[in-house]
Length: 578
Image 1 (cartoon, rainbow, N blue to C red):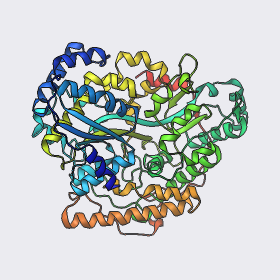
Image 2: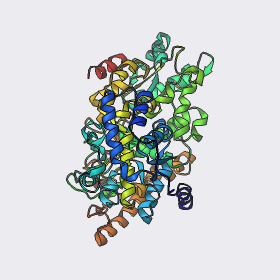
Image 3: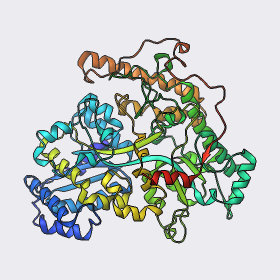
Image 4: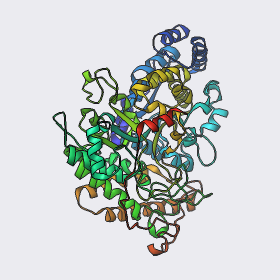
């Protein structure tokens, strides 16, 4: 992998490009008129903002920089369109490369480990905030903006306008990453099917409650069973009550670390990530920066009853209620597969795929009507039987610009200009219209999204509601995301293959996490590798001394309580009222 990354850097090596003769105000005005509409700014305000970029970029005209992000529509727009605009306006050329999420994380880890400048900036998930704030290998943006980067920090950046800024702030109160886009994992369902009177009557006759948006996993399971085993076919098409993925790849680990355990109820109450136990099952006491264990025997919850229940349900639902091909899908294949129109619901659906799900029928999307209106809707994620009020309800990805200290200062400054440009108020509404992954509050409240909201299935209402902050990324309990995240997918893959039971897999995972955190603890104690905030693991005790006694939650006698649903139209009214 490292050889591949170094080869890609060689491919995008620094080229001594001649200064662009076209960069300047005329080019900015052309882009504003032809591309950057609508905007929260007037055209005069856009011109003023771009004039600042033109002047700030003058020392770097002719420079060529390299940045990296994962492949979602938002980053495709940045890579294909905004790089061209930035070069024509500022004279700085940007090679914005797109790779899979796993490759992005690997590149970040490799650059941190080797100190070799692979890329000048990354759109790196805020899930690494615990890593960046501890290792201090990422540029502290708060200090940078006030110091070495002051001359390249836009006066119109308006940090308070970024919805996910709290997720990119370290425990020291400083900013380490700048949000570029964000998307939540919500519940997705075919409202046109749920609204059918004949299906409503059949469902209520069998289960004793109304067919609607599931509040808990019991209802989700009932609905999955109903569509897969009772309805079976709609309009001549075999249908299924559930969609997921099971391919043995890094994506499978994120399926779980992205709050799946927390949705089941494995963590502790407390937002954004649970105190003392977060959604990974890692324990860290309130007021501390030192993780103290993942295993139940150390006070963690990674292999506790709620976590094991979560993995068991993932495996069971995938086998029983999803299309047979889903077991071989990865993240990128499973979510667009919904556009085939043969799935009734998905418990864990990322709003990043809204752009794909609103494509017209002519492009093969069978989940919109002839007028382009979505036949589906999004709603809050249902929660498992271990979930408690006040606990995290789901995951939100906040892809954020990150600059590592191994990047030479002048290149870091040019990259910082690009990061601010692609998130600027001049371009953000148009970028969000393309990618539908909102980062700014002013953008989601723009009148153009009020007009478009009926065709976006609840996305705009969700991001205008207070609920939007109840879905959160991985937090600061995770001391080194790249090292720990890579452990998950192998263990989960062993469940799907039948090699291990959910309990065996999670026992092994928790043990491996603790083993790695012990190494981190030694490095931190010896060399302050993690700034004194590395793990300090609890001594192991019998599981019985922790279960239900301040550690992992004790096993419930009944893990399938009565199903509960709510009416979607009433829910959306509550969202819209905000």
